Image (cartoon, rainbow, N blue to C red):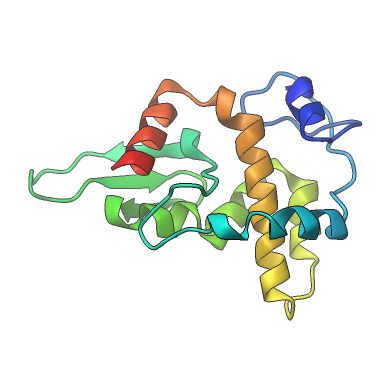
Amino acid sequence: CIESLNSIGIHGEYNRPLGCSDAGQLGLPIESSEIDQKVSALTGMVTVENSVKNVPLIGLNHVTQLEVLDKDEMPKFKCGVCDLNFTFEHRSKHLAGMDHRAKYLEKYYEQWYEDFSSMDSNMKTRKLFRLMWYAYQVERLELELETEAAKNLRDKFVNE
């Protein structure tokens, strides 16, 4: 886990990524100017309606598929981070949404959440980019820690 954090340029003490045995605290939040420069290169990778390709998906270890009684009914899922149910059709809207990402940061990456939430609400686009940047970092940190069920969901959400 420490090596994963170091590989994306975060040094010092760390919060523990989900499933990681290395405890500690995160270093200082990434500087705003650094995030803005890096995110500007990612703006072409923003979600397309009902598509989750090229967007970070975080918290999949907390998503479970619910049983549907009618075979013609669209699959439903429960997000344990947000305590919310969503359909397969709305997977992108939920998992790539600001609310889900912010709640995940709040629960597992408190310093990053504080950095994001302390931003001026009049700077909505910049705040969105900041959240997206943190989501990319979380996905990179936790991808190898996903359960087999989470990996299957990722594959299903991205490729169907």
